Image 1 (cartoon, rainbow, N blue to C red):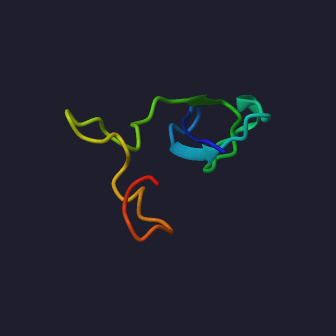
Image 2 (cartoon, rainbow, N blue to C red; image 1 turned 30 degrees about the horizontal axis):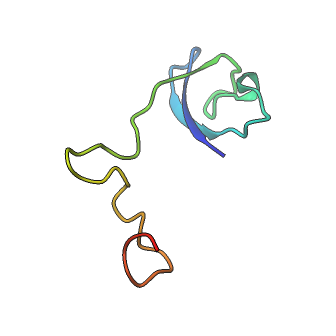
Length: 71
């Protein structure tokens, strides 16, 4: 499920919500005041592109494998 960032139009609070693909955005409500008047905002990406480097987030390859990287 993707994590989206929203801003409440009533109380102006910025919050995040997990929204599955089959749920419409109009079902998201503010976590502070409960208002349904929310707008999805543009949020920063979780990684950055480096020239000549990898676009994979730091630590993403530290999982089950003892070697970092793809097999």
